[in-house]
Length: 251
Image: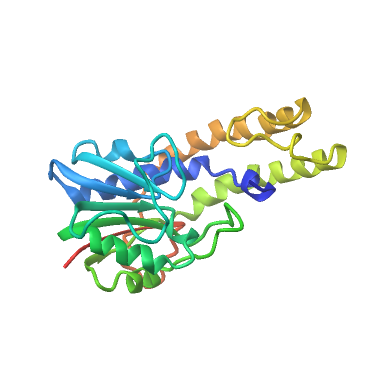
């Protein structure tokens, strides 16, 4: 993780995104039950609970092993037979794939006829997980990627006010990080904490706590009213969503 990932204070955005994603899942899957779902690039399966009412079998694959990962794969060929799943879910993965169309085509292959895909991908978003952050997508670009599917809808987070909320504290952290760098040059053993792991000296922890945790709580509270605003429905030719949510069906 580099300094720009650490500066990317996006928890308030995630709170709103989770709300919007939940609404899209409900609208897409409705009252369907006992579905078999594949989560591509599942990580820790942070959104698994959003499918609890619809999915009876939730299988996660990723390119690296993790406690929530059911199968490790090469990032190219999904290790399942054709027509195996009712739903294929993939969030914040396409931008990190060298060939995102390969993931889209593999999802089509393992999806049952009439099955549903739910993908998310960024449009306005900072560089993260460098150096494997390759792509940003317009809604039109996503529709082109999924041209073999039908009933394609796009949309998602399109709220510039929310983005403005988390910009100032992120910049504050950038300044604090710069000051810390003048005091003590970060090394492999004195870097800032990585998602809560206790690395680094006492100075780095003080700077991290002062700059992150108050803004984390404050921004999440500020993000709650934005859940009352309608999300981007993807119908505009000039949709400027922070993150797109695409749903489509296999023909």
